[in-house]
Image (tube, rainbow, N blue to C red):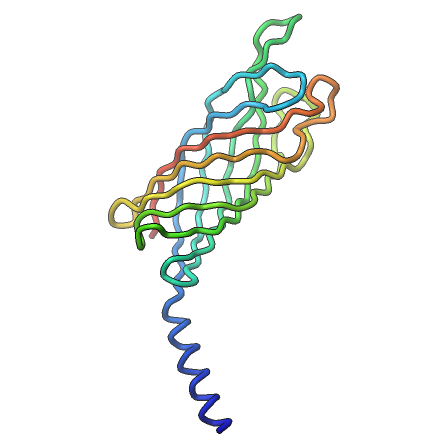
Length: 181
């Protein structure tokens, strides 16, 4: 009986291993970002993001997707003394997303946390070294590895502890195109 159970477990495991696949790709696109909350009256600025994508297919309708992205974001705000000013912050972002396929291997919805690490505070606003956001979006696989994404990242941690930006959080809408190899 033990040998039969072991054989069944091994066969089931081999089918599960075949169902899993790993897709590696690259992506790039536009960021439309601003700050939400706080005393800053901010407007969108347009920047970019680029990086690598790794998708682990668990079952045909569900995957886990992790990314390593360089993301340039920030906001434009109206400084009473100096007029309009851009705040530019550069991060290395690592979203870890659950990916649910609505149309098999074509259209999916993604959601999950994003952890970002500050690499450049060009405007010296004393931004915090880390940022945590909740991400949600959609992806469509177009043809032969080519895909397009739309995603919204809403910050849950403050950008800075400065008085003027004490409650401001990142808010970023991203449009991407990429390719799975």
